[in-house]
Length: 506
Image (cartoon, rainbow, N blue to C red; front, side, top):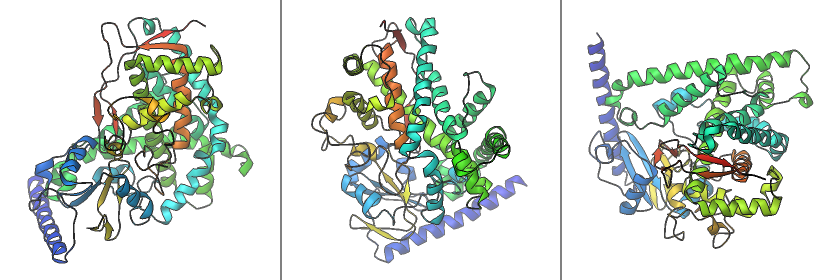
């Protein structure tokens, strides 16, 4: 029976694919002027030519061949790749409404409930409502000033814990493990007014494992073939089943251990607007008013667990790796901290604004090692025009932000990790998108609102580590491995390196 069902589904998928191919052919018949790209073949499009791995470097090579706007037909999906500041401005700003929706795939449909969250929903009333509800408890300067003491405390705990590890100063430790606990505590203080005491906390262990599995499954290129080509989708059944199981377990954990616990706190005392203590209180208040439902609440928690925690952690890890591999830059940063703050005076959030070299190190990390190098994909709901070309409705628009920030035609020696560029020739460039060559958080309607949290956390964390330790590669190595691991639109270090952290004497 299973074989017959598979055959039936495959034949149906083949029919759909043929109809899609005919539709594309008719689009050409309508005299659509499509962007250039490799010549597609029926049903498979360009998939057989370019494969599943559509990372930022591979897309850069295609852009060098076909131009700053190119079209890939991946089975039934249109992928438009944008690789110039001018076209990025069109997509993200000038035509921000036209290209303001999000495309999802078969896996992200599972993890976001087909767009019941904020990050992956289509542009419209639901997105505006979710953005409004999330802004007050998460993304304002008031939140930064309220929680920066907690971030400083968490960074201080990292310093003290590392000092207690004898091996940290000799053979080295995988610093990322302790930083991961710090990042969870930073965000769970905001979300739930709670924290995890140690890496061994059973709830933290379970949460970390499920979030890690979610990221692996969603960011993998393994499932592209079944997403692009309907005839092959039946072969994804096992993969999608695992995704559904992980999603259900995560949502149940969010609900049982955090949301319900916070509801109990709220029910035990009167919660006026002045009494709302943490982000989930605001979110639950919106649910109580009928603005959102329980699923929306859980998908907001899901967004923060992935979008806020992981991306900032990746950037911290990249920054530390570059400082280990460039000891002269690390020393220059340490000298600035000592000179401006005083020997042993621990950096705080307000201090970061008067430490220009620290700011330059963060900017350079985000430029060379952009956590989301293709930004989160955009989509046009209707037929549109971009760069003089016709863009069919529901195309997936990828802005190669990494290439915008690493194109040698726009940047001086972009392959070098050189923070000085942001104090010299690029001194006016900021991370907020004031220059379309540099968009680590995107820009416009669908930009990442988490910039307001990420930048101070990066400053506090990197500043405290450099102040208190000399960060070195392990014995026998001159550098640590910074091989990249790309995903659907992510970029992190392939191997979490061992780092020697020698405490400084004050």
